[in-house]
Length: 425
Image (spheres, rainbow, N blue to C red):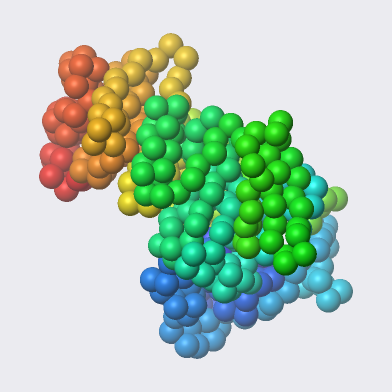
């Protein structure tokens, strides 16, 4: 059996290892188009903050790991998939046949249409090459502009702050991390960042970028809103999109990403998808692209088992984000923005930078936002993921969201399970 995996991130690597464990005789090829050694993008901020060396970004650090597993790692781009011939076309023109194909190509950064925003000193923070350039340019005291205050931007912000740069963050929405936090939580994050010395401009757009004779970029704000932002380094973190362009003409159905069923299989037999590129089931009963590493890892494992002939169903992703924003930890889970006809409970402590909001439908918690604390967060995640019924505890939680641990214990006992509250914090 010939297995070809396109993409050497966490989903692809875990899929390759799972396939080898499931089939000792299979031929496994792992294709990556960046570094010869598979690495984790999620480790880039730690590298930028000098918490790890470049080698620390490698997904498998032991020399010869893939060779021992007889996994062939090729540094190649895939330009097309021929589902009828069951082959992929490589960037060097060769064709590589497969019996089972896994698409794990992840995402690519989206560049904003800002005139003049190109050239030296302008980088996304996405690849190993980007990380090396940013590490070199983001010296202590350097003027750095970060365009985008979403999830990726906030992770990068944390690393840049640790490097001691003079940082300005520009976000076009009215709050930070708008796809993870509601207005009160996003504004709380902004106040915290400003207290730590970061300049944050929300509801602000860059109109154009101009470079002076010394190479410094001046970012002009739309509507003449304030003075131009001068920077030696501009980092663009304005979102990503799944890498699916090479699937044109393949017959594989796509939406936002590659559409998959609960076995991570596409509409084309023998072709699967996993990780940031896959648009599949979530625990709420819907579907979506969930670009987080825990989802990628589980996708890779389940897809590989099905490729190997095992019958393994994917239970669905939990939309989950955890951030450390220059020292302030925040979480959002599930349907954090609420559901029509639902109810919510909310606690806010502006002085201590603490905020909790629970979203409920009937007597179930379906989403949560937590800022400024970590205790009990695992309990909330468990209540959402298991869709546990709260019964009479619903009304108590609406009055005091801090009672989640007791509600969880009640729900697990009612369902016939041992209490888990003490293990979930």
